Image (cartoon, rainbow, N blue to C red):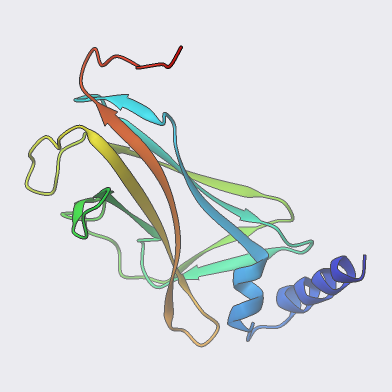
Length: 165
């Protein structure tokens, strides 16, 4: 109960003070990425749902330094280099903008990937990791990257599920 009261007090300060401490803003917001399907056949689009939720009992404003509010990267499990970046070959307006989230409000973004790498080649079957990055401005005006990730699998067409009996 005391922790809940403390969280409420911190969020109240967060909502009323212009120079919000970084730690308070980050704790007030939940950021996640969820693949619509955990297993996708090769060649079929992979859809990612990105969600930012106000977990604070007061409104929160997220500020951004451009029209790009997020990015999405895909990695093959066991490899360091990214296979695909959503923002590659995109242009964004160079103007500050913001999102205001009321108490408990969720803002969703939908990103679709055609399973092609940045060189436009079909990626091979296997386990992959998606990383969603929210590109917020902190109260001091510096950009921060809040990251969330999830795993999914691309399988061969007609792939069989092997079950133990």
